[in-house]
Image (cartoon, rainbow, N blue to C red; front, side, top):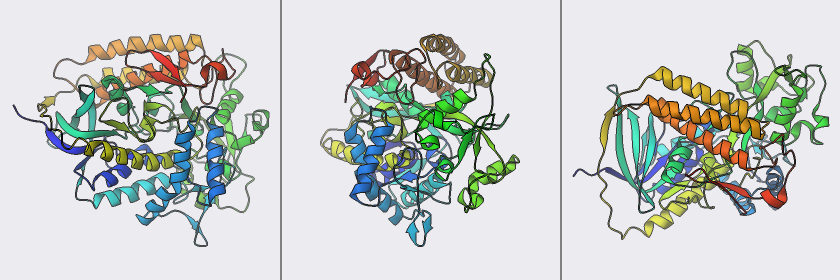
Length: 537
């Protein structure tokens, strides 16, 4: 019997959480980092807004904790939030030592303010390219380590579980000579750091790689998911016909941008005392409502307005956004910018403790793929990059603690698998994905109710059946694996949203428009069987 190839630590994803963990783990063993496209292509890379970190002392840390708790609408797990804000400054200082270049004024780090933050504490890099700079610096640092190996254009399709422990993973890769290969790799520990699932919605700011693969394979293996109903919709994505939903950073509102409806009215005073700097879920629903007509199907544009902002070179402050807008004939100084919400960030994910441990031994998760409860029902702006740094490091430390205890255990020989697959019909897969994404936007978007959610569940069941019929034995492709992942994520969102009969944070039910702390100040737990339970953490 041939034996599967082995590594000490397998990391799925090369964003901020995966790279930070890899650096830590490489001191103690061989690390394989699997990434679905070219290195650097991740949600981390596209993060514009910045990284929130309290670097001005204990009062700033305390206020950052308060802001995080308040934004999460009663569902933030306080211990997780404390870990985030207390350890955050240490992790950012570490990142700066490793070469990250954040924007400065007069030699000091420049700090800006975003929605629901009580103080300016957001660090930026190159104006609106913070994620790209963090990704660059972490990747450069990781590449210097001889025990870190990268496999790009590669995805994990299944976790291998034996006696309740994850011991290996099946890896699907594109071969240099053409075709695709499915092989098995065993590891002392597997860390999911594969990001979110924005592609489950037709309107999203996420890149094409964000298909929820890590969440899906964890659920398939039997790991618990948590809080899947809480999907954050970024309020301001560019809304032009035929143009992708390009993110217009919240930092623009932090610099004084206003929101106006089609009548030219500044409307946020009707929705929240913090106006344009209200929590994201409030702003996103306000924009949605202001754009709705009185006749079914009627809609109106909503605009971001910076024409009144003086004393700031917006092109210099937001170079990437300015360049993209210029390609479409728009200018921040001169024009109203049409915007609408788009799926942006998943507060839920694979349930973990504060050190990345999942409900399956040997499987860990960190970053957007994970749910520690740190974001509650609504993520505070710019906490996500910090989350990746803090909990990526924490997961690595837990892996080392747990796996060192297993060193005396005789390694299990896992039978190798090395299979070439031919692709199924690509058009059928594409059609199923488009149908699923459209259904999720229509039935499980910003405004939900029992009728729409049940319609979404029915649509999901039909699409899932279509996907099961597409592939024949010996067939497989990246798009097919992604389609199955999206269907799995969609199911968990729909069932969790149906079970939570209240409105809280990013989850709003038209038929239950109030917050119900008596019954639902708890986290939803989704199991492989499709059952939903609620637990207080």
